[in-house]
Image (tube, rainbow, N blue to C red; front, side, top):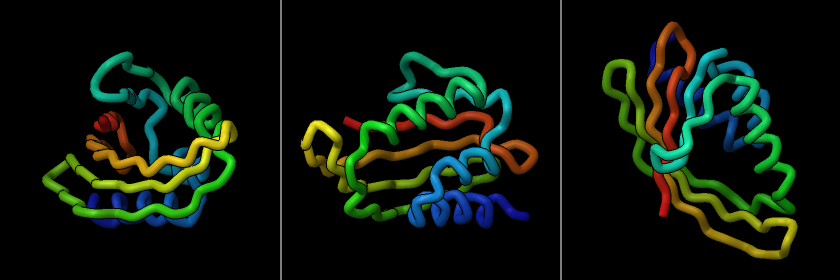
Length: 115
C-alpha cells in the first residue's frame, strides 16, 4: 500500500470517528508524538492514553475538515480544522497541521502544529 493510500486511510478513519481504531492500525509501537515539537511522548501505549484523555474531554464533535495534504517520500503533512465542544462547555474551532513520518506502513513520528 502506498503512503498516499495510508495517509488517506488515516484521514478517513478520523473523519468517520474511528480515532482509536485508526491509531491502533497505523501507528508504530515506538511512535514519537508532540505538540509543537515540545514535550515528546514516546511509545504507542503512552500516546494512546493521551488520545483517550483528549477524547474523554470531548462532549461533541461537530465536524472536521481536511485542507491540503502533502506527501513527499516517507513524510506527509495534513491541514485539519475541527469544531469541538468540550465537556466544560467550551466550543472551539481548532486548526492544526499534522506532520507525519512513515516507515514500514506505520507512523513513527507525528508532530501537531497549532496556535
